[in-house]
Amino acid sequence: MMLNKKIHILFIPLIAGLLVSCSPKNISTKYYYENEKTLDRIEETYKALYPLGPFNVGFTDRDFKTVSLEIITDTLSYIYEFGINETRISDTLAAYNLNAARIKTLIKEMHDIRCTWINYSDYYVDEKKHTMILMSIKPVALKSLFSYAKYYVLSYFPQPQYFDSEGRLLDKRKLRRLRKINGEVFKRINDRVCYSVAGHFR
Amino acid sequence: MNSKFDIHTSFFKAGSISILLWGVLFLSSLSVSGLNDKQYFLAGHVTSTQQQAIDYIEKIKELKPSAHWPNIKPDLFLKNLKTNIYKPASIYPGSGTNFCGYGALTYLFLQDDPLGYASLLMQLYGEGKSTFRNVIFDPSPAIKLQAGELKYKGLLDINPAEQMWYLSLADHYKGYLNFFNRKFDPGDENRFWASVNYGKFNRMTRELLHYDSEAIGADLMRPKVGSLYDYISERMKTGTVVLFINNRVVHKKDHIRIKLGVPTHFIVAEKISIQDDVITFMYWDYGRKTQLQVSTNFFKRIVFGISWFTKKENDAK
Image 1 (tube, one colour):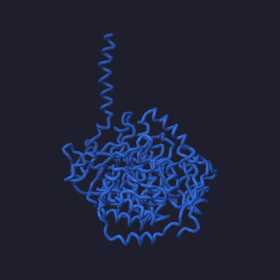
Image 2 (cartoon, one colour; image 1 turned 180 degrees about the vertical axis):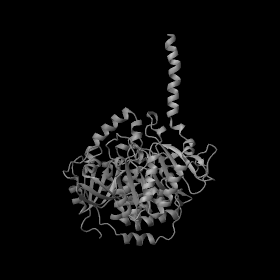
Image 3 (cartoon, helix red, strand yellow; image 1 turned 90 degrees about the horizontal axis):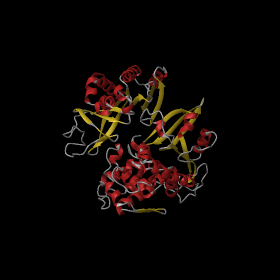
Image 4 (cartoon, one colour; image 1 turned 135 degrees about the horizontal axis):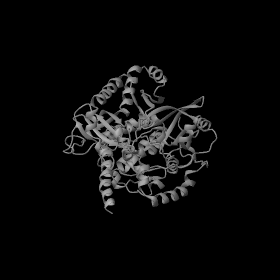
């Protein structure tokens, strides 16, 4: 009886600890600051490459072996899938006059940090179009059973944003409405970078 | 892509009773969906040209606010309507919504009868209700308050004519997927309220478009047509083909290994070719055209419905 009680005393905190440590809530600004240089470098590289020829890129499999590439032209979007080591990637990028070497470096950096997707996204404030970069990552901490199918999503804005007292991204300064991106509420990391933990990587 | 696919998540939350009822309703809808059963629909009146629609819309220099649609800005409404007539491919049913079926319908509508589309939307805007062919659109007060207020849907945010139209379509047309959510509440554009099953899509096109049409397929079973490539490419030679596909495996948004093999998305086929068992396929959805290459097996896996629309000889060229 006494032994059972001891087991309970030990077991309950262990389970509780496991749940908390694996919870997506534990992934927050800390993850960004721990990986800030790499994450920002990926964003900077993508931002620099995009105007030379719009594209979105990411990994559509769990093992980060299948690269999905969307090349966007004025008239059409082309969707390709490659194995990460396939030489066809370079040929395809070259065919669209894209900088194959730099994009391959970007893909490698994304692979190494388990970045699942990066793309530009439009949003509208007072009927004016703005753009931001969305980047999703599948950190190892979000790989556990309890955080199945969760992604750490970063939004990079070109200008400072407005937040409420809880650090949640707002629509605009005067209107105290939360801005949702892909249905998710985002929280402040700094003036122009926010994060969310979402069930989708794009 | 987006929460337009969230219907599946919501679906499971609905509980086992809902699933049973859903199953019963699905089975009862098979005759409407036309499971492997070709349906022939009669075409309506002669359709209009893009130039007729341009002549009509360009005569409207200024639009007054509508008492029926308090949150629609008239200048944005007119601009949106003009853009849709000049560039039908630019229509955008919104990121995260379940409006893709209405988008595909509208894309066909704009190519078939742009003048009809423009006058229908103008009447709906001005009078708060409209009649087109034998269909009477009389949107509920909740819809009239919501149009112009949809946010965070990308380009749809600034396109109130499209907001009004998609909301009115979803409000008017009901299928079995809408059974548990029939009354609009804010946010329902992303939920079952807005969902379109295959039978409902074909019903809408039959009632609103002046095409002859033929549909094969169902919501949960793939069409049995032999070579899917041959079947689709043959029909594309003489008409427009809309496919009802499982987009969860085409446009992946997560890495879940086991995905439900159900269709979620309507696309309009533009071009198709085959070489060495690889299909190169171009389609329209969400404001632009996309081209991808897939194996014939993969293509077979994703296609659940094929709707084929042909125009009558006396239609406007």
